[in-house]
Length: 506
Image (cartoon, rainbow, N blue to C red):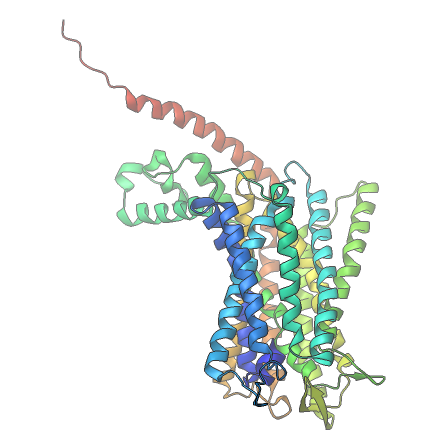
């Protein structure tokens, strides 16, 4: 998208990167919104077909914007008709939003199919499940990146937008044919609104100062309990209190995800302005994205083998929180090495190279010298993403596991928007120097060094609080059992409200 925005639409680098990250962020967050709509008002089938229509419309609209279609827009008088820039921008953003909302809704309906079958499995098997799920997703991404990028960059810069439209059309036909097996109805009553309602009711009770009615409480969320004057049962409030313990972990994923988003933004620009020629073959820019995926494709089976070895030796495997810390360290190192590589890249003389039919001034440094920063981010993803999913799934009660994964999704989507916000902030603060339109004349390495420092601080904070997520199962089981007993007692207590004692007058 950056290549299209800069060359076709004439955007500056920071604008193209911001648009790309916002699109990724919206695509990440829409499954939560679509899942809420499916559960509360519209129904899962309605949301699925509505989002399928949006996705189809979006992927059909993008080729209209991308294609100059010199062959198609030529009339009988051999006059080429082009879209007006304003109309082109409107169609472009409409197509992006439609595709983002569409893919989010489809993911909200289809992706929980495997998650719902994990109840009752231990932590090792759940980690294995998430490892292989992300392995398959990234294997698919590898094929897509190489195929579309090569066609878009070498064959035709506009055909890359037509491929998703065709694949979506074929995919939707297949999904519709198997719709009876794909539409799964999960249990009701554990929606995101209920969880948010506990927070709002607790805040309401605190603001109204009902201390004289409910007495002192050990936690502000306890004010949402029915026996303290709130509207929610003991079990629901206790489960939400367990979920709240994961919020610091989710918050620390924001900056990590902003660092990961450098692959489709800052790192992409570095590769775009480097020499893509390798032994006479012009490499697609997305080939570097594949380099970042390769560590995950290699490490996922390797981590599975190590887990089997621990099981065979009857030893306790490393905690998932340790994997997350290791991944954050690799992400900080990646940003640091990217800054060093940017300094080295600007030392090479400039040369002309064609990008999608446009000649650009790029550094003569081979793009493969940037591979180390991509590899480090790929290693970070191999450690962090499955481990975060395991912690979010295992360290929450059964009826809140889906909600916990939704909050993790919020963190991932928020990280994309945080990455876009950092780009905008450093661009305007530095006067365009930290995120220049011409990389050779700017100081993009300072942006990368700043990101590395922030990521290092983020990692230290995570290490400081990591003890909260090492062995949470004992506390989880005890609190859940206690809350179930308390709710039973509360049910008997609530039954007494329907009976009144009338005085007897003979």
